Image 1 (spheres, rainbow, N blue to C red):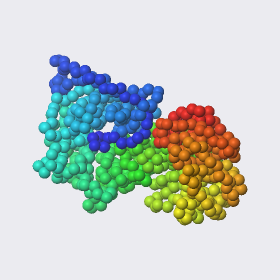
Image 2: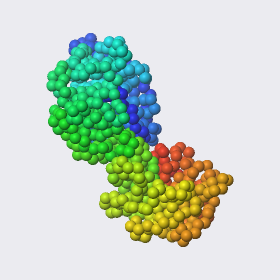
Image 3: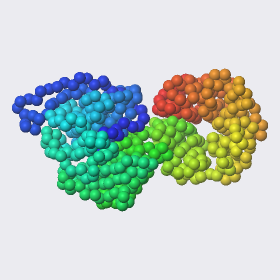
Image 4: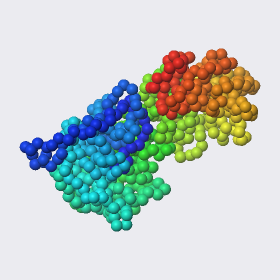
Length: 598
């Protein structure tokens, strides 16, 4: 598994961990009666590690991941400016900390207890120091070898505590980076210069990957431009002394689209490549030919890259993207999230206390469902999509608006009984603002009007097969309809002193009554509105949630949420409800008096 220094810290998914400040390392002199191998090392006990308290304090997955089997693996996690190492032996169900030295930049584990770390002496400085452990991080040993001045380590690949390779960066006469490769067979005591397959002056660091003392690959790449990057893949069969070209973008045996990012081989034949702004590719002939196996299912609209990738068999692999750990058991053709689940941050809708749908805007957009009240979310919906709103009318019927594919038009989709998503044609060219469907198949769609500044309302009594247009005389932002004839719309007015209002119709949109908002609700635009029945309803702004118990005649502040921006809300009873916010999902069981992070 390859460890790249320059691409470790990405993602923004909060975990329930915190970091203990690094203590000053305890330096122990090597005992005089040790083997010649140990005598070349300085042994250090480091006391810095992650610990896992009950409450979360903002730890995030940093991108790097390495699994040694289908159950045993490691990830890097970050809190503020500190990096730490976590290990699992149950596919990410539980994690435990591994003590690591201060200045951690990269990790390469060779067994459950043994591995190497790459360190920088000071933040922001190049990484120049290697250390390894044989006891799960309790003690670390530092090879007493030094690199020539002006050179730093940009990548490393170790197969054991003794055998490994490092990629070094220096500076050429013209000021461009110069890359070189060196190998060790004695745990870093001495290093042997090895060959580089291409001219070594480039601003892009090559990616290296070895699976045995003799067999390895190096991916070299040119300057990226407009989503394209020239690439050359080389293989060695003698440990790096010689290299031969096996694929390149110049002869179309390797994709030129996307930027070289990650490489993972599991055998002399089977390997995977990941390209930023691209996809995951697979080879079954040692790298000579590549096929695209997937565009990663999470956040494809934002072209969110994989920031870590590790395959353990020809079909089983792990990846980190947008701060979430994913697993594939099908050679990269499909992926499932492991830890943590993607965070709901967009529209949300529940049909029961357990069954819900939401969208996430972290790193892009994905539609997700839960069957346990929001504790775990599973991506669903068509691939390569960007979702705007979602509404459940039954535990198995979901309506959603979004963009699917590479187009720019927004469409209405419906899924019934867990079946495939079907596009529903609504006769509007405007952006769909929301849906208010019912379980009977009757309902409403609110969209922007072709008349600037106004909105249109569309009614269906046939599950979307036929629509009737109702023009509105006011701009609208959101819609809710507890019954097909009882409609609520959050919108704006022409009165500068009262810019926002709620509009209510009890006759299917023929006549509208205006309800003035509470004065303090004018602080920002209305984010959305939902009604559980004709009497109980809620609307929300960026920081406050309002409730009515009397059909909208009066509204009270149910909660003020100072720690995050409210994106969506839904209630299944007067007591059970959810908020999606910029920092994640919250649940209440007492009508909004208290909110618990899910």
